Image (cartoon, rainbow, N blue to C red; front, side, top):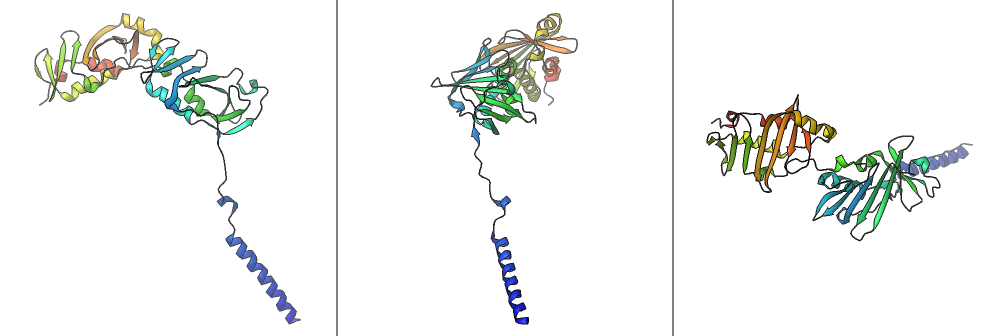
Length: 305
């Protein structure tokens, strides 16, 4: 009886040892790296793209000419190079989170017929791709997407739609002065009661008018950066002409630099500032920092040494 019990005990211990060995040497499921393959929606090489058209309500087209992007539709404008580059960056890395349908018979339920946003991409070889973006998914965080000529419907991250759904104002270059601040060699402030003029020297800046004297280099540099960094506020573009017309003159800045001579006339209406540039058609509201940079006296620019 004892001998039989001993055999049973040995068998039980052997079984327990086998279970222990197996549990210690097997790889837990959560340690096994899942094999996933991202579904690529677009294959876009940003360097090869020559034209982009983004259609929401009004199509906006940009084309590359001499290495720079220009808006061609709805009217010719200079394009914001960084904004266009952002759109291309999103397109070049656009993958689907999942495939909703392999063969969708009705795209209306996804907001894809007609699409909320359509992006047409043309390359050097004139090959085109047409991306369609639709409604947000019920759970949120994603939107439906498809390609023209492809029966599949995908979902992509919502921020992709935000990055691609750019309007004319989003893609337009808003600069009112196109000179590089480091290349500006002379600044004239035409204002009352007296004009102020600066000239760049190898040691900094010199005041020429109203009386020749050393200038505070930091103060003049701040002025130059404010003027060359002036941007049009397109959110209130419709009010610009009327407010500029009724405004009080602050000054007209005349800058000489690497791209010739450019002027920026600034007026103040109530508490806001409006500007007219020699390189851009129209009048626009500008940041108050631009007006405040011009609304100074000669002594504000004199050297404190």
